[in-house]
Length: 169
Image: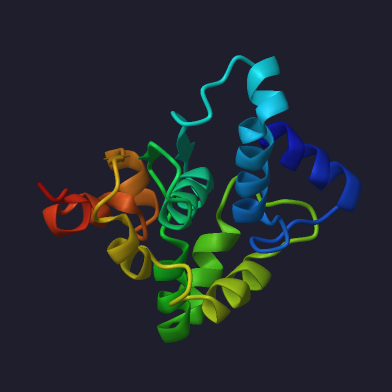
């Protein structure tokens, strides 16, 4: 999917968080590899598919795992909690604009302000806290790095608390 998103940026010239349709792209990719003809051609056991992602891909992975009961499990690495960022934007929009503006890879046509506004509008919907009840009984490995935690205080480190990733017996 990463190549697809790079191509999207080249074609459209701008890319915001929801405009990228990342969760929908993940669902479409899973649908593609699960189709019997593609699974056979790609030698994939469609009943044993897991997903992994880093940063925004980690958020997409968590969203996808929460809504796709057929996934075997998932790994998220230093996932950004975009909902938490949005909730923070509701409290202190200027701080989020500054943090978003300081990102190294902002797509063409997207600003820290436009990202902060979009995140603010979707704070509750996109938060790990909202996803947690859907993930608690799923196979989920959460990894995060200390450098990411220091740079962006809205991250997956809180997901690693036992009440979030605990599995039922």
